[in-house]
Every structure is written in structure tokens, then in C-alpha cells.
Image (tube, rainbow, N blue to C red; front, side, top):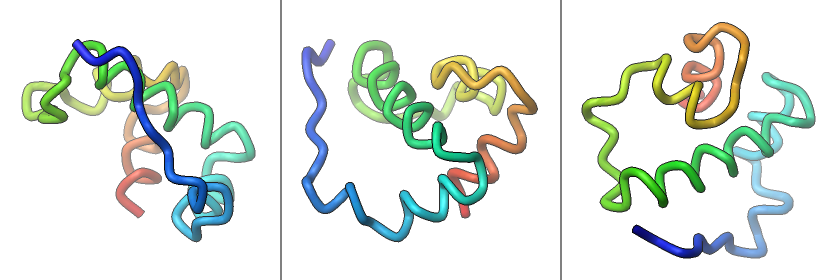
Length: 75
């Protein structure tokens, strides 16, 4: 289990973050960070091969359509 995650300072203005917020709203970044934290705790190798869209959405705290969240991450 990991006890921390690291975010590079350029994440603040990164185009991928901005795109995610345009798709999911300003709180989109919070869901992404919560997903990273859940992965650090539960899948420290970062391999999510046994997680489906619903598992990913739950790990992020996303309560709407899991497909919308996962598609936003892919875009």
C-alpha cells in the first residue's frame, strides 16, 4: 500500500486537467484525485485490469453514469 501520491506542479494548468473540468465540471479534478488515492491504496501497482467502469467510478466517488466518467478520463 502506498502512503502518498505525488502531483507535479504543472498539473495546475495542464490541458488534460482543463479538458476534464470542461467535461465534468470544476469538481472533475477532485474525482480524479480521489481515483488516484483509491488506486494508491487498493491497486498500488496501478493496474486496474479487473476494475470495470463502475469500479472506477466508485473509487473516484463519482455517483453519476460511470461511462460518462470513464469516457471523460479517456478523452
